[in-house]
Image (cartoon, rainbow, N blue to C red; front, side):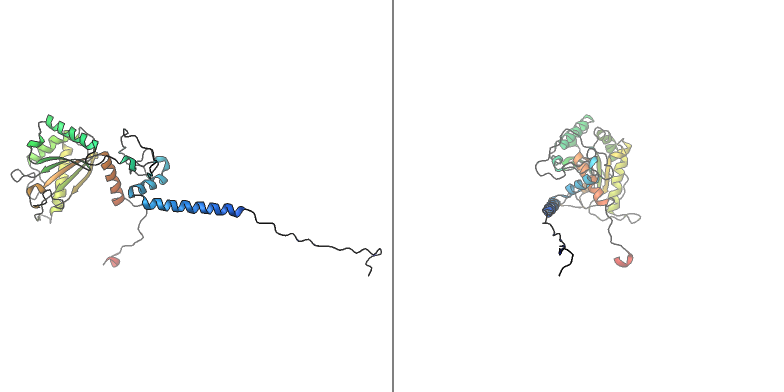
Length: 302
């Protein structure tokens, strides 16, 4: 059948464009995902093997990366063997860190804070030299002990039944212990170490006026020693802690009622010990980073 005058047939073919082949973009996405997963598991592993001090250091670093010069943490919070060692001649900064940082020391700066540390030994030598200049010979004083501990140098004043330090059942000092503390205050001022004062009692039961007990008595006696050191010239900002420990740590374990269990201990802290004490107190008693969701009400408690 002729469709035109010249018999030409026009045929129109509709071309359908087929989809092209897949590109290699998915390979890049898969590689990125695998790398991210590897980094995630690496972080989880590091957190599982890190100590609490290192975790606090990591937290401080990410909260304030630019504050590492003033805070006590290291730019390498976790020491995997390749962290650069810090100079041992640089003194630690005892100032409290700014908000968002922590003063926890890294592992490579915590060496030498035990009982054999150079700081404790040198501090012990200074105290003994100053006491000898003031004609206080430790070996001749029966109720005075100077000991090197993991925290620093501890001076312990033991009670003597013949010459008690306090009035019985009271925090009122006798004249001898007052004179001793007043004479020791200038010696403590020869150094700048922070001071911890602890009061102790024996295990004999005590119940004073106003329902006071050994806990109250030990705390009041420790605070009385602080007041006497302050009167002797020791600055209040050097007092790091004042604690009453009652009879929980007897000096004479075989006889908990012995007189030497009634004592006052004054510890001059090393830099390392003071740093750890501050960090421990902030973590245990400071404002937590995240409040607990537990709502305590009388109905839930009782």
